[in-house]
Length: 285
Image (spheres, rainbow, N blue to C red):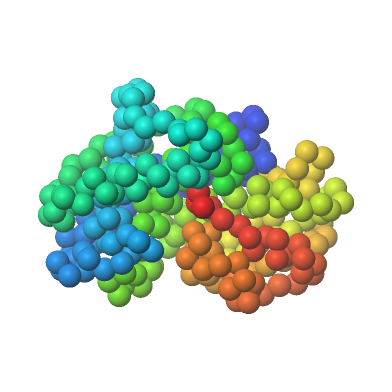
């Protein structure tokens, strides 16, 4: 699958666009297979701090409904910001309220509802205009973001939550390289925003690499108006950082902390710059 398209003006610094549309159907099928294979005890295992597998599945359902209501149906009612509330606190609050309200829903009923509503999510994403403006992606510093980034962001969230469920019940990360390749490519679009606090001479370049068939390399260059992943002419790299795939995606979702990623990384060149890149986070955190 060719997951990249030509970019639209105004977002070139994010790098080449990503087309994740064809992956929503197999991701939904993988989620259903995972959930339907769980035992009653496994539904009670902790998936993320404070949330069980059942809670995380309920959170996914909330994500599905929210996307359909907002972008498919034009529904504008729902919770709003409390006075002085930041985006992060708002998101965490409404997510917790949703999960709390769904604790009365049984795992079989929750699974059936996820199957039904997830199918609508798949159909929605199959037809979106990737060049259209969409929700901001705060961890990439893009607001509004192009739909290609917003939809890829949603794909990575669904994938990540499925891995958290798998890990909670003793399964390894899904080895499917097609999924993981798009996940990593999307996560790395946070690199320019991560480096925004780094002061360096114009033209400074740092390359982040991820090993394995699903990995790749991403080079951020400091241009006149900030860091950019846009294609640049070959030149001197001030620093390089390389991770294995598990370290990369776990770091971006804060399954591990930056200090752990630094310890696992292979770093060459300017260590301060490399360690700044190891602060990358690709979720609202």
